[in-house]
Image 1: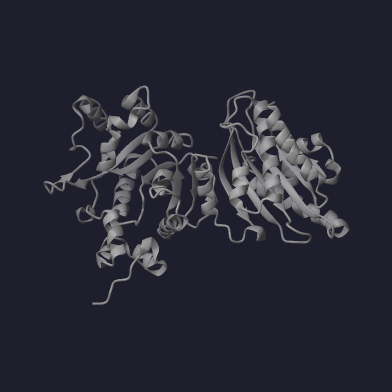
Image 2: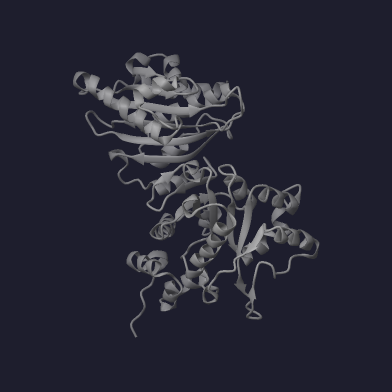
Length: 470
């Protein structure tokens, strides 16, 4: 065990043990009682811990928390927090509630099995009072454990559990809570891909911004939230589903944005066995796109997300500048069809070798990674401004040395042209719409769907400028 990591973590646990105000329960399922062990190990735990438990046997777990179809899940974690917190108040509130603030720490984890190399992940949460007799607040996170050995995963779990509990008690800024989760852990050991703050201590917290912080602070490569703004762990949404992803700036969403997606959706449903209910549609924004002005603009980010939410879209925020990295991420969750929706200009970039100078195998390695699963590119046509002709996915020219490779991908339907589209939408470029709405030119109103126009006007998004009266 790394001595520096051990000392830093134990120092936090000891400080909590010496805090006469904090008192609570630890309930841990799977991977041992690694978090509670830290508090017993450093001493003084009798002043902090009311109870520890591990309902490791599924039958015991069901008897305590009720039956569950998935034991490592957000639902199970929530049941654990509910049950243990109710017991804590019932048994101790009248006795010591005037002098103590209560908390429950819970986790349910699937660590590396000795039988097989399964997905190692878990849910951790803390419910806590900020002062005596107050309504509780809560932080829950989902983690992926990246160590190869079971004992190392348990060790890392203990560290991040102590970090979460310490941050909940002593850090009042959610951004600080997030940045502290990796303290005393070496890079590459633990990924946090979902976080949710709730309760009176976090009334003004927008969990979509907190999801963005997970990516920008380097705790994960991608986060997801639904149209209603609910933060979700990607596996909850993507597991064994067909997936369709459109990447863009969405600043703003235009008719072409929706037309592109609709044409690709028709193709996916026709070419796969997926039903409408089995197809997940994602609108993806990269961190690079969000940082295009040099720094994160939270108002601008939330404007884009609010518009996508009004259209009923699930949003993915990622650090995957290259499409092959996005493809690798998505194939982690499903073996069904994955469709990446793009325009011809993006396809041109994919076949530009300069973007793969960092790969030993160059463009061949990138395309090999991209198409190793059941993935297809669905390509929306564009207008050739020089000739006025519509340029489809199969008509544009690639470099001579790549023509055979390109033909192979087209002929084997890895690259599919979108044939159902509205020609009148092809020139609905988001930068043009943005320039018009910022200058007071009402021409942008004909470039975006009615619900998008309404929300931009009502909330004055993207620097919207009202037209000057004649």
